[in-house]
Length: 498
Image: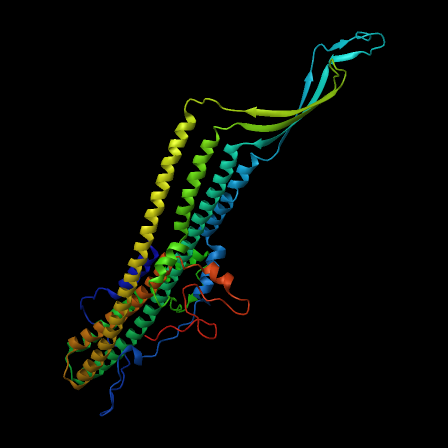
């Protein structure tokens, strides 16, 4: 499942919690709060007036920058990609090995029955006895060769270099995608943590309203249904808090899996993604920086080099060779060793039309690569434009969600005042509280969507590269993640006030 979809579903699950049906009321709590004194202004039940509880952290605080650094060092998918990159680095080395000197050695032991010798004096008076075939024969040979001219190998080396570049760009693009996925999950975890804090504050509001309803019910100023409704709202708020905490823990487990570490950490509000003032410039940046697009363009050069290698097979190959042999039998020459050197020429004059077929195939591959590169450019342009539209929509939704939250908070305050004065019913108070809860969850969700839309825009524009930002950062201070806005003192800016 996509990381954005996962965290959004988790957040929406908190917002769309089913309302429990009103059943038998639970036992009243033994302690009741005292009613507010006459003339005292009622406390505003909005979340801004409620202090956020400070739970004990589960472990160290990990920032977005630290999460990306941990992923770069420990992510298992990234380690597999790095291993594939090391494999790709050997493509050109293997191609060059066929053009560099080749030296082979061999040795044999042979037991002959019988052996063969020429008696002394065979080649004239005084000539020694010569062993033609020894009974226990030992022989060794060293062969060396060096290609001097091979057009097919030359073009093949060039093609191997292009293939290495394509593989390196492709794998580096996979690395960026993995780091982008880590950033997506981190933003989701931070949003769900905010949802937990919202649910905790809403539970405090529900408990206060329940205590107020209990006091009024015991005083006989409201019907029992008002007290039951307050208890139902409190029970629902407790269930919402449990659901929010479980969603947050699930997302932390997903992030810990990407970081290959135990779930013993907390997250903090990530900095806002940094975007250029003119978003239209990202389209040209994407055509320049996108690694998959660079790989598609380099693939055109690769296919041309491969086609030229097929053309080079029409020309001859010239190589130099040398051979040295030694054995324990002198042979007819009377010497136990010998050597030879020379030049060799090979020329394929007719191969049944194989070269012509390979050239036609190479031309077709070039056409395919050119079309794929052009299609990739069009796709990148469309992705950037669509991401800009998505960002504008997400920002507009976040602004409207904040406006609706503010209105819901004010509405809840007014309904609560009216309820204390006896001018509003318990149902109206419960509806106002539910609207406040839904608007708070919607604000958290839409704010997350706006941040993820900005990060996604950086990704499709090829500007999201944490490693490049870390390399460009001077040693005097910590680096801010790519696509984030650092504060003047070098630390990450605080999250916007909700």
